Structures are given as C-alpha cells and as structure tokens.
Image (tube, rainbow, N blue to C red; front, top):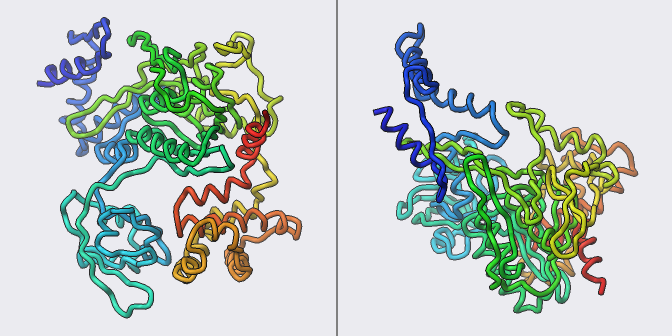
Length: 526
C-alpha cells in the first residue's frame, strides 16, 4: 500500500507538459526503503510512546530544512488558513473587529454581508456566541475567530451590547461566504492620477484590480501609481494577469525554469486596459515574489518607473504537494526570471535559514536602506531593459529606478514604541466608539472630514498620558515635537478608516509618504 501511495505521489509531482520522468528506486538499498525501515523501527521499538504522525511531519520538515529557505511543510490547519488568504474568501459572519478591554468591538460590517443583513452595527460589542461568553474571559483572538466562523448556512446566536441600549440584545446571523480583499485601497490622488495599493496577489486580485481601474478611469485617471510596498506576493497567475494590463501583445512578462521543469513563458495578450498613460510602481524591501514579477516586467519592458528601495529577492517557484490528511508540502521546483533574463532570487546557503531571515537587517546595518551608494552589484549581474536598453541588475530583488531611502527622522523612537504597544490604536478605538454618531453627523462625507476634521488635543493628551503610564516617553522636547506631526496624521487616518475604510486611510497617510511624494513629482514632469 505504501508503495502504491509513493507511485501516486510521484505521478502528481510530474511537471505539467514535462517530458522528464521521475526515477524512483524501491530497491533493498534505496533511500526510500531506508526511510521506511527507520520510521517502522521507531514506531514499533522505541522505548517510549511515539506520535507517528508527528514523527513523519518532523521528518519532512527535517528534509526541507536542508534545502532552500522557501520549501516548507504545513499541517492541515495551517494549510487551510494559508489558502483562505489566497483563495479570496472564508465562511463567517462578516465583521471587521478589534479586541478592546477583552471585548470584541465591531469596527465595520461587510457590505451586504450576513451581519449587516441581521442588523449588527459598527460600534456593537459581541459578548457571547451561541450562549458562550467571549467577553471578559481572556479568550484569545484565534479562539474568538474560531467561534465566529463556521460553514455556510449555519447560524450564530450573538449577544450584542449596543451603546445607548440597556442590556444584551440577541441577534441570529446566518454564516455565509465572506470575501477577502487583496486591494488595500484606491482613489484619485490628484486630478488625472489614480492610486491603487495591492496588499497581496490572491485568486480575486485581478477582478478587484480591474474594478478599481474601471472606477478610476471613469473619474478621469490617465496615469497610475501602483503601490506594492509590503506586498509579500501570492499567486503567479494573479501577477501575470495584472502585468498583462500594462503590456503590449507578445511582451514577455516572466518565465520559469528549473532542473526538472522546462522553461515556461508568460506573455502579454495585448488586450490590456492600461496600455496608455504613465505608471509608477512603489516598492520596498518587503515587496516579494509575485510583486517582484509585476515590478520586473514593467521595468524590463520600460513600461513603468520603479520608485523605492530594493525588493526582497524571492524568485523561487513552489509547487504544492498535497497529502491525504489535508497537509501540504510546498517544494521549490524552479526560478522566476524577468523579461531581461534576471533571476531575482537573492543568494542563500542551503540549510541556513537564520542568515537568510536576517538579510534585511544586514541591509540596514551596512546602509543600503539609507543610501543607494552602499549597494554594489558585480558586472556579471548587469542586464539591459528591452526597449531603452537601460542597465538593470540581477542577483537579488529589483533595484528601483529612483531610490528613496528610509526616513529615520519621520518615525521617531517614541512614535514606534507608542505604536508597538497598541497605545495609538486603542486610543483611536475608544474615541471613535464614543463619538461615531456625532462624527457621522458632522462629516457626512469623507471629503468634508478630510478638510474639516482636526484631531482633538484631548485625544493627543490621552495618548501621551497612556504612554507615560506604560513608561513610554520622548527623550526630550525635540523628539516630542518631531513625533506629534505624523502622530496627528496617523490618528486622523485611523479615525477615517473606522468611519469609512482603508482607501480613506491611505488617502490621508499617503500625504506623508515619501515614496508617494516622489511618484507625484515624477508624474508632474512633462
């Protein structure tokens, strides 16, 4: 039976369209036979009891640890969680929430979602689920989410405390499919200039992206700022579909190639909606994988200007290998290459994940995030863009056309500590919760809020007082003064987020974003 299972696994590992054959040795001296004997011996002869499932999982992880940094194993539970974020939906009640004072506070209900249909409102506190208390009992966020989620069609009986109403109200919500958005925000940042921020590349990204494009073009968008900062990647196909909208027919987007995987090219169809107009792509050291594919394609085809800092450098292709119990191994089978032939994978030593994980910190220490002059590439890594023949480099990430350093003066030590301890977010939650109705009446639109709202001094004083209480204070008056400006902007953006959404949050925060400012400067030039 085990032999048949191995044969079936071998069949699923064959690359699509590949002519290569997997060679598996089942002989007496084969590695597979050796592994099987070891597992059987430990299970049946070891002095203490053995969790056979755990033993095998540890064995798989042990093998993968000696390989590249991105080959990995995930349990069935971990696989489900990972797939939810990429597949674009999950089953649940449809609320955005935060935990405040050990109580679940509804920030927003999903439009047309089950909670909105049941009458649940922003600002409601969910204190029980199916007669089980979730407030004031120290329940973890993960356990709370587990109780709220469930199969479509099942019902969740919610105990709700609502401001201005005495006692606990009961609402019955029928769970349904809840979409997971991959577009963080979009809006017209200037007349004729649109802004779209993609948080990750999932199954619904292309559909979401095109809906944003259609709306912005209806508002007069000619040029676009495509924000891929902190975008960790996702599905290759989503990246290819997005890049296709900018490129002309037959333009190469990306190709993959590996030891057992023949070269596979992905080319533009020439039917994109963004073939005209200028494009500026924003990236930083956390932009990776699928985000680098889009960035590399637009840079190599001389279709867009890349602004920011060198990207992460994740250019390895993983193929999922699914096990009968729902667990999964993601095995690296090929490299990504940009149209000019660059491999964007940064160097690594097999089995040394610690050094790989600390590479971004190393960039900071030798000054790469502060000045472009600290970045050096060997001549062997020099490539040419395909139309204007500009010099670009491989060997680890995408180097931007326009470098923008980390502004160490913008986010002070004091600001970072306030944020890390949740002081800013919690103060904002309390403020919006207490003044939501008043704010909505005073500012019926985001436009009126953006021009008229000023963060109350009382709220700023509350943040500073809570910081002092938690032993978080500025080192001097200069640091305090340096902190207050951006802190006010952040608080205003958080209030806008809770009243409207993430697009409004970025609308405010981007006015302080140096990468966005540089992009606007470039687009202002003839």
